[in-house]
Length: 177
Image 1 (cartoon, one colour):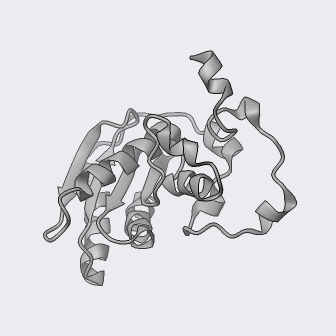
Image 2 (image 1 turned 30 degrees about the vertical axis):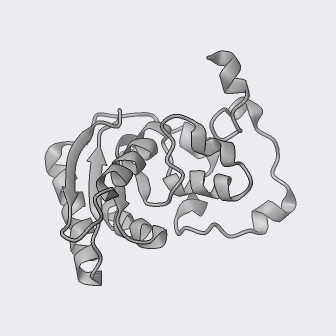
């Protein structure tokens, strides 16, 4: 396993970190909010107690209300720190596969302590092998849930475009504050 970690890019294995080329810093991330998450910051966030069901319900309701007001159909999944489902819902009209995608986004965000759009940025930036790392979902719409400086879970949304999934989940994240 340790030998396998040496092959992973720097955002998964900090020992492989290399300075980014100057041009990379000027490139805007394709998903809102992903610029706030540097790799050093993500690995410094400790895990805390898992999100309670009542809080998960509040976040999901905020995200659902936002999506409903936009006329979007979304699956919304909230997971604990280990990526296990605390709450899930599938709005009417969503594709059947939407739940699985939302759950994978939430789990990936919680377990790797970063938004899933970070993974998408790496895949889009020329690291397609990242898509084959177990547990990583390289698609925007998953966020770690951080409270009092600790990861307490993750939230994932799927059903519309990647940017719409990101917007819906961001409302859930904002409800945590």
